[in-house]
View 1 (cartoon, rainbow, N blue to C red):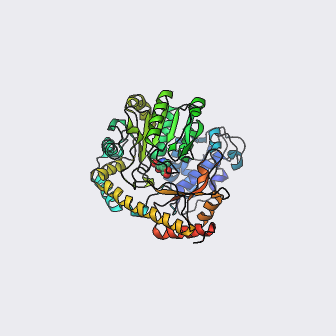
View 2 (tube, helix red, strand yellow):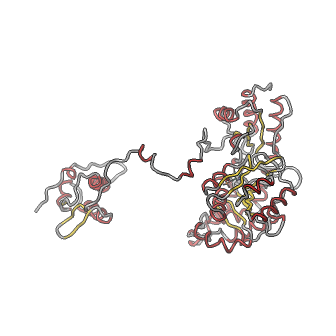
Length: 482
Ligand SMILES: Cc1ncc(COP(=O)(O)O)c(C=O)c1O
């Protein structure tokens, strides 16, 4: 006996580009159920009957019925198909309601930035020369990996990272950065940022004091905040992090974040005496030092400054590094070097927190390092960045008509131009942004008052023409003579 067909089902189906008749019928019935137009228990027509009413093939209707049954919208037995009784959520929740839904309190401390530069505008700090990246050599390394890839390389890898990459990296770090390590201590991460989040997760508890350089790296603050650490700003002077005895007494840290090779953003190099004192005090207070060596590969005067981690055996230092500056940020490959005695304690947690992805990229990177392409690229970039820095420096001094107290420059990819306190660096940075340049405002790197006004100017990804244009623009904004 034919069933009376609910009118909703009888509306003709017409071909629409991008969706099949089957998908349309499926959506129509599913939405009808979810919106209450097809009541719980309502009997649906037989597939033959509906197919003939809608002038579609019976298979189309059968497939829709099978899918709706599989998802639990329809129940079928020998008597036919009925709508499953579902407790539909009462009332409508509009966008506004959801924006007021409870969220983690810890996100309230993240402030909105005036603008977000997702690109790589000139003067943006921390971006390497993207159009000087040796695409052909990289493509070769990747395609060699892919052409020899056994299928298992496409599955999950060792959560700690590709074994060959860890071995090549340990060797590279020992020679170029003086890091004391072997491959077992290395964990490959998605850049320094993930390594920071892991340090927080593995080494601290919410509420623990976490020391942050003042001024200091926003990414480290974000990681500490996400772990609900109690952020303590510790002044950094011309010799880097400068904790006073009172800091150790009043807020003995669990974690200390520092950039000893090239303080971010001021560029100070932490002296040997400071490094040794920090290690000694951290040992005494059972604190962990997180050494972020984000751009130590680019050093322009004399020999490179070696890592603090390598100064003494068993320093309580987690050494972090990244290929974001030496290769390109979107690669998202970085690493941490754990103190040897921590490896076995942390491995079970790391095995469950990480998944061992990016395997083709990790293998390509290994080839890139072992073939010498990486060392050659670093050499070329070092020369390029030195020239770019010299140009930025000389253009700024020329436009200002005087020698400027620029900070940094021994290494890295940026210079800091300190400004007098009557300037508002955030406003100046916004004005430059409108003109297509993206320096950072120095004041934004502070946690507490007083802040130093200034501009953090990246030269890594800025061509000569862009450096000259940016300096002209800044000169106009600051009413410099040149
Ligand atoms: C101080 C500092 N650390 C680390 C990084 C690199 O972070 P990631 O490896 O997550 O790209 C940057 C990049 O700008 C940085 O400025």
